[in-house]
Image 1 (cartoon, helix red, strand yellow):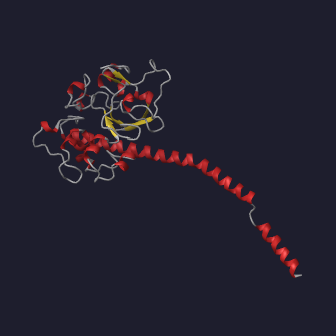
Image 2: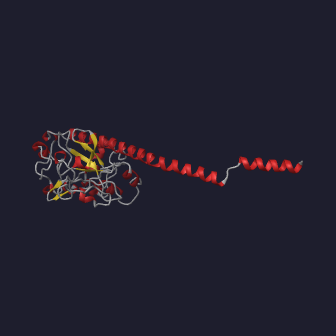
Length: 280
């Protein structure tokens, strides 16, 4: 009787346990579900990051237009030579003198007063906010000035006072000169290289003697992350083939590479002529 009971117990115990095959099936189902969910989660995360960058572009444009208002309609130059302005004081985010002072040459530090020195979520967002989170790193202020998340279209809007011969004919110095402010790009998602999602300047599709890859010359040429950043004017369509832009009327949007090829989005003379292939 005792032996029969033990066998029954053993049989019952085996029937209630997972077999190796059943365990492998369960693990396989879990792995399948994870593989199906990961792209969804990744897409949702990327969408959230793009939304954050759009919000940053809007805030940046508010600061940009506030500067313009304070300076009687003058647009902020993308680059100056601070050594040509004796006594000019441009502080960092803690009120200290910039080190090196040359960091004030480029637009980011001269615009921070209009965002209450809040770099994160405006000038620095997503990858750049993480990469430059440690302000104790060497040459931090300089890195902020060279590698913000957005590049400025200053050869067409605002100008370059350090190398004025680089400015395009008809570039805007004052906001009152613009007739197509809702189309003109001021800032765009930028990159210096494949791993650095930020640069202080962006070049339009036609820049002096240089051009982005065109449909006429490269019929099948599309943007690739492995491309040299300068090939696309440092513009970075990092959001599923789109780049976030801030326009002169203050709004932000995401544009495809094909939409960005339109020179009427970049230069007032092109917009007035209605010529998407305008060349300076």
